[in-house]
Amino acid sequence: MDMFSLLLVVGIVLLALSGFFNFISWSFNAPAIIALALVWLVATYNRFITLRTHVREAWADIEVQLKRRYDLIPNLVETVKGYASHERETFDRVVQARSAAMQAQTLKEHAEKENVLTGALKSLFALAENYPQLRAVESFTELQRELTDTEDKIQSARRFYNGNVRDYNIAIQLFPMNVVATLFHFATQDFFELGGGEAAAREPVKVSFPKG
Image (tube, rainbow, N blue to C red; front, top):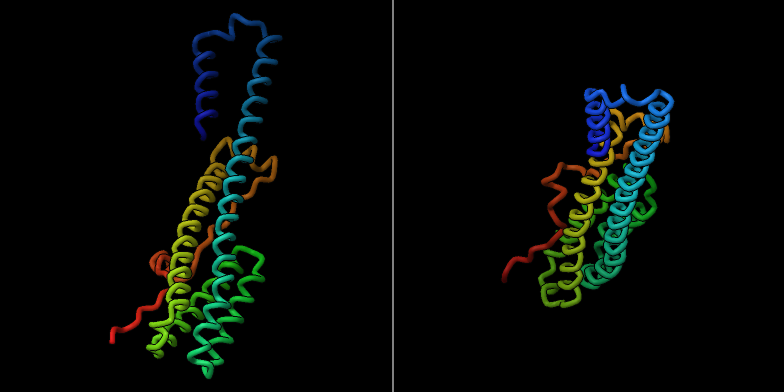
């Protein structure tokens, strides 16, 4: 039960215990109770709208970072291809994973495709480690830095989104707010979970070149 609902219920109970309603005719009590109920209904509805808006805004933040990631990948592939052009299978895997991730529609599809893309990128960076000359390529190291930064921002946005989903889902399930949720068809939202658990999700895509 949210704070407003709790205060409203407590207030009505205290008035009833004090005998306040005994001194007022039923012709006044009934409209007053209906008015209080309507005020609570509107406040609860608006609360759900606010929470749902927060969820949607949080997801929009994730989409911004995912797009930034997608935009970096072609340049990264082309840079590595310049030193390992014969590794076509690895490049094709990254390109295909990127395309699939960009076409994802549902939250579950996004999670699945992003996991595949992350795995493909890790394979690309593992391949890059076999070409020491890439260490001297400024464009590659800058792309690697930007991609790692983007990965960190994606995880931060994901945690923010999941926090908003948690608050929204809790509000929907609490009584008596769940009555309003059912009446106006507010539905719980899924979390944006990446495979491998939280520890794996926090691990950024990165490459570490051996010193030589």
